[in-house]
Length: 293
Image 1 (tube, helix red, strand yellow):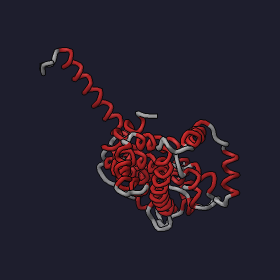
Image 2 (cartoon, helix red, strand yellow):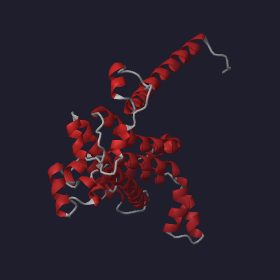
Image 3 (cartoon, helix red, strand yellow):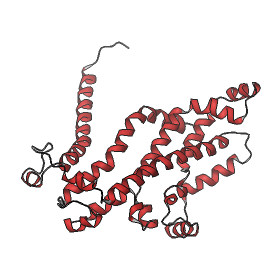
């Protein structure tokens, strides 16, 4: 096959590039719009509702959110703590469960895998879950954000499938040299599973960062609300009076839309900054971990 492109190939490339450009614009425009609106003065927002870059910057929304009396700061710190601690424990326990289940000689491999997969299709429901967490003393407890979802079945299966594709000869040769199971796991399997670990780490981090429903169910203390639930409360607020329930030491309360837009930016930017560092592992980890069942 020579390198000469036919007329049909050139037309296809042009159309494909145009479609990709339009998709990029459709995805980037809402992000830029929210960022621009978060620093747009109220008068300019009313006169130019579609303008992306304001002529003057208004930082009152961010000042209000980050003021010392604002519950947003506590929610932000709670979400960061939940994401860091929760993701770390999720990855550790997922690895510890996936590794033995990837061994064909493990006698409980099939029944345990079947039980774990079963939980992906069926669950006890909302009320039994609430009663269980209540009986375990997890209401108004930070660990209610982490312990009930310590291992995600889908992520465990992806990692197990990856571990099962590591050649048995590597493990056999290491054991001939005197390595035990832990040494094999840390010296052979973990270095080879960087892509899959990065993938499930991203899954867990995004889950923890975006989760708000468990705050509504299990947390009555406002200082323990997650960022996303506080964001939801602000977005549901229709007037400035509603927003003042969050609390602030500022004499001036900014417009409701300014606060909403600024809150969205603060809640979204950190997780967007994490993704580029893990993106190169994402596709590879998903493909490798899902090829073999």
